[in-house]
Image (cartoon, rainbow, N blue to C red; front, side, top):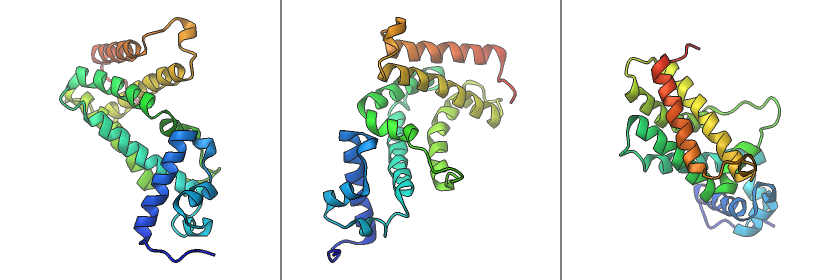
Length: 203
């Protein structure tokens, strides 16, 4: 039997997400189940499905909060601008991944069911993170069109993200790269030089 709720739906939603984040942080995304969340907060499984449509909906909301957290983490480097700002973002992204490994992994490890579109509200969270990097590229070249800034931000992120993945799964050291922070800075620095030297690549 479901217990009588002492909380509003928004309060229950916050409780569910907090419990889910704790499970992911401590045990990894594979340990996340609705039953386990329900046990943590003292509600039934059915109560959780009154707040979230399904597991995919729940995971998207968990990942959305992680994206907000990443954006806040990156914004702490806002005193740096332009090329130095982009390098600072690269280091901050690596730092976040190290500190919150399982939450960070869940963003990329979880895949929506086939033919399920990414909701617009979730896409906006992604755009907010990239927007911070795009703003730094805009400072480097104020004449660069928006499409060029988007292309540059996403291309550089793909490289930085790849270094983070290889580092955190233990394979980067196997190829002789030991200082990961220096590696992401080197990648960002040379990418910026190439981008500034050749002009934005046309999509």
